[in-house]
Image 1 (cartoon, rainbow, N blue to C red):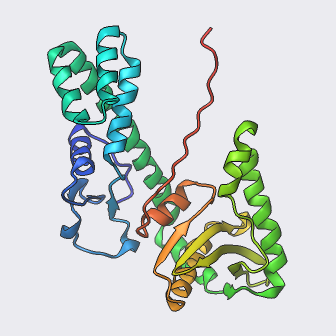
Image 2: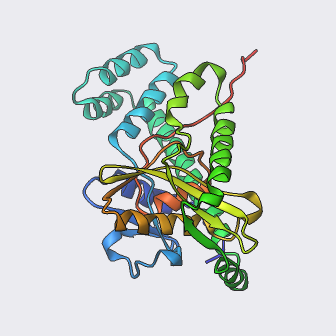
Length: 296
């Protein structure tokens, strides 16, 4: 299926139901454009790009929408009462809904606000998947060519002749990511970035010309592996180098008896996001950014 997915009202309702259902895990059948229980998938082959795990949704996410809605209210009485419920610490969701029923016009505002917020969130999730799928499925001929090209690459565990190049690029990538942060929070954010140390483990991708094409850096902490950078040099992107680096790393983790993998400090993009989420990772920290200007 190459057509762009349309987020119809029916599909939106199905996705929201699946997201908010705490008793069962659902996924989106991209081919049939319907939401189904995960255990009803016809295939578990991730290469098909047919089944998409629904966006993670927790009570905390629902609470955040309620909080933003209260801040947007122009009615001072109900804004104050709803805020008191949000800060009460018990029975928040039930009491919130019960109070809205007292004022049908505000309840309608809430339903409209929640629907708009969720539609925007889900549309962004679908767009991110579309970008990823377009990069991964550019046609059978191109994919075959990519596989042939990738077969000429070597994936080497901590080669000495690439160690310095990996170390320099690692620092450059993370420093550039940190430079994009506001100056006043760089000192707070910097501990999340871990530069490569002398004893760090890494796997390097080497091109047929024996040039560094990409790398994945990690360290072992007990039975856990912590990935601190995954990077492909721009001229080698589109050849699935990052995916192969991840696969080789996971094989290595398993051979060393590691049972858990954490990803820490990697600058995000749609390909990286889907690479990890579609391989079963759960996001723990998400950063959103927006520039604001005075309204005058």
